[in-house]
Length: 153
Image (cartoon, rainbow, N blue to C red; front, top):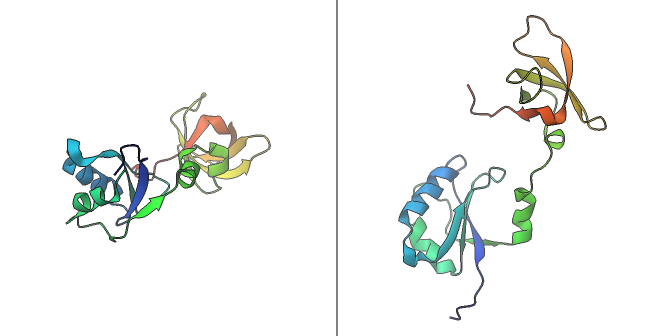
């Protein structure tokens, strides 16, 4: 085999929610002779662990016997396909009414709320604060908020 072969990214199907565990097990099994450039998980792509290597045959011994690996046939993933998951989308495009958010800037920093309305033209989000005694809609710039993590609380 020639030494100028390019690295390819392969997707390994795993149990949803176990991506980080499987990636950690694979990382622990790596040796210097494994010829693996990277092992990574994309939060937006649930149920897959990605391994970057020159040779497809290197992956089989790494995943052998791991409980949460679902299938044997490995899929080669194109970089163009991965790039759409690597670019960060603005919060205004991701957030939806009814979603829990956290305010990360401004005078209300650190407060939690629920999205009532999203105004993409003004780049504002109208929210109801959780900590307030009564419901009062407040408009906040979209760059002052972030979605509340699903694992919080």
